[in-house]
Length: 346
Image (cartoon, rainbow, N blue to C red; front, top):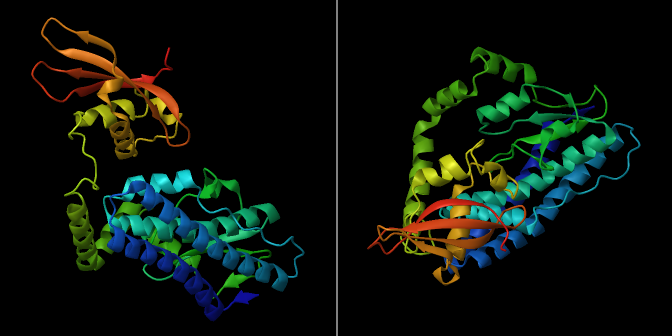
């Protein structure tokens, strides 16, 4: 059986339409209400991900069941995957809210992920095969995935229960099959493998070549994102810096000490969901809870410097109590962060 180009393009176009609508509605919301109210942003993003993610899952179920029926395979009806939960959506919003285009892209990505998760999880359940089928302006990473051809479905394609490589503005999708006679019109893994091998398996080399071919378009997109980020960072709704109205954190303190893999307290932060890429999310959590009226263990040294601690509830996957330790030099209005580590209040 061959899935015709018409059938496949119609399918991915309908999926893409849902992603695009969700992203556009997020953009319209920001244009009307701004991005100052983070809780409202999260709530609206979550509503979009839930609504359009369910539509994406339904389309994936329909395609999956159609292929199974056409292949003469008796499988249970496909089960829709769950859309991103509130915590996952909140993490995305905190990571992208300084740039509305990236935030809108994050909503689109989470909607797309539900459809892909649906296909993958049902394929794993039924022992089907899958292939990553490119479409449109395909990035080198997707080309690499496509070059692998048809593979037996397994949990190796999942990370944290989700397809790990899904990104916004991408029309590539997983196709499934239940026997080797099924294929998708136009899918040519050998062609992708040749391109991949011609670059020595170096995805970065592929990216450089692709950039040279499309650099004018890419640079225009970057300028748009930068302009949006600069606009929104000019008010309090923008990114909270490490040097702000409440405190100062030396840049290496978070990236090279608290969240750096193998560092002294890294495992404690990893245990509550932070990775080395989540420095901004950690800083924003500290900012929200920094309150000098909650200072404990206050000490003044001989040189007049003050040290103190503030306990905070930190975490992305779950919340745990951390002691944050601060030092204010004599004559300084703002303290700087010395360290932070897991410790329950006594």
